[in-house]
Image 1 (tube, rainbow, N blue to C red):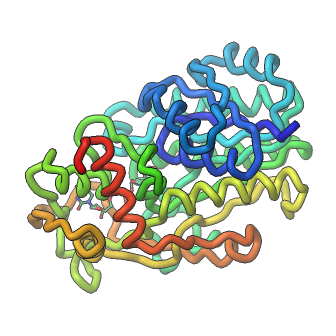
Image 2: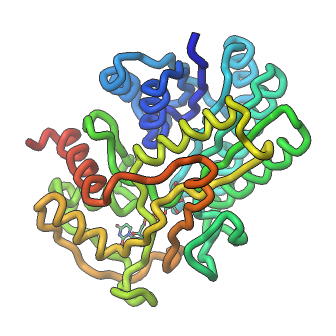
Length: 342
Ligand code: WQD
């Protein structure tokens, strides 16, 4: 019997790609998702890719009783990967209580139920947003966290601290937080990808929707930053590479290779790209001429951040592999699949 992994938020962007990689690595998967920001068809598409349909349950993880009941019904879970969370930076500024109630209570319910039912391993979806605008680049795991730019970002920092403290209090619970940089792209099958609801906040889905003709042009939020071409720099990581980091983290915990019972790793490419460089790379990779204009800066944006991934490379034996052009082409192929564009 293969090890059963619970993936919360498993019909979401990173969650769905991670379910595919887990199944292809030989794990069985059960997804819990309340479909507040994703569709049940994602489960069908995962099955089309892997030939195995993950189990699925739809309920709200912020409901303490439902979470405990779930764990009592699934005593064979060997580890949890926790993605489920609200994640819109701008929305979180307007709805802080919803974000804290959902993102923090869900995690606490999961930790409590794990303890109660004897599930020992958790991988948590964290974010480079916990670093704010770092003084020194690239950021390592020793780089101090700075106050988050948004309630969303603060829920990631708070949740890291909750896991750290819970693992400190419970030697039999092992946690790993993966601090993602900017996840982009889609599975090469073009059957799963990023499906933002409404107008995309993030750069790459806005680019692909512009390329598909859904948006008139891309607005580039400011070119007066202190960077080589004036546009902000980020570390854009392929979503399949990112998903593979979760499989490696799970194996580390199941095989007892973790060096302490709470660890955290930067998961990026180690390379910074400016918005302009990414736009040019998209046009080169796809042959699409992308209309864009420079507009004012977006409030809350930091100037630049990219990862030092030495720890993940050495400790996890994981490294980002997909070149940016292939990643951008995969995002475009996904968009064309969704829009029925040949
Ligand atoms: C990237 C760059 C924008 C849109 C956020 C969250 C992070 C994670 C990823 C959830 C910035 C510029 C963007 C556009 C633009 N979220 N941009 N025009 O802000 O780095 O990170 O999303 O897990 O936690 O903080 O990502 O894609 O929004 O922006 O010029 O229409 O693209 O100014 O420089 P960001 P992003």
